[in-house]
Image (tube, rainbow, N blue to C red):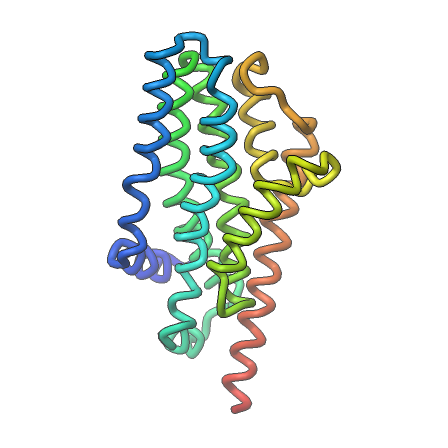
Length: 237
């Protein structure tokens, strides 16, 4: 990783209007969890649609999409990526540095959001479980959406289609696809660490961890390889 790129990316991220979208969505999930807790103290009645249906299936991936697709994608769109690519830096160093910023920002927001929701549901153990699940899902999503931003000029559109169709629809209809669902990785880890009486894991812990690592490694490799080809194209033009 490169500390200069990390600092520049972090400053650029804070200066973008997209970062403002990080503010309201966590409060929506926390607010709904609080309302559910007050109205129905037994969280088994309402936690599934709020925490899984809204939290893991919508808010966590959307926040990751906003940040993950912008740390490199926005620089490719406005042409400023050229200034970085002309430096004698390994492309892996650029991608990993930007991924650390994206995953760190979304992981912090989603982790704190899920921790508070878990505490409201059933105390410290649930809070830690949900925070861990939210963190793992955030890292996987950021790696995937960062790779999309290098491969495609429409990463947000493709990312939304992925979230709505794959994560939101197909994984609920076809149980066999859950081993390729980032949301299910997060839910499984949250259930294994937290309380399984509230969240029933759909995968084994080993599958969730292994597939999470696979998603991050493969997505990062694709982003690095594509960034190298962009550099080569620039050099030959």
